[in-house]
Image (cartoon, rainbow, N blue to C red):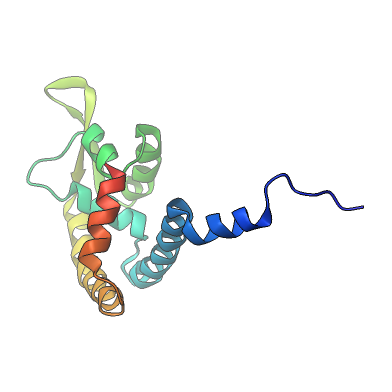
Length: 148
């Protein structure tokens, strides 16, 4: 005896074909794998690359704005910073203006690692955009619309 699903299978197919969240997750995973493989020789994952780029500023940023930019909570950001700090690529300093706050600084060796990774990112990013049938700018605009 088989149990009939409450939701028709046609609904499952419709959601599989149209769900923005599903398609964004699949694309994010595929892009993450591709960038992870490409950045491996630089000793970085795509997440670490994005985090270090977020710290590449004239002045060290506080944790809050970095967490917001990367769509992370502070706990996740703290965990992501630990391996970078252990490698000497990032320092976490007390904010002199707010003793409770932390400032995140890219070290000189972190800047060197990032300098090695940027050309890799440019190449892979260019290859991905060149291989797209649709307009990459339109995709970025759409993703920005739903991520704000």
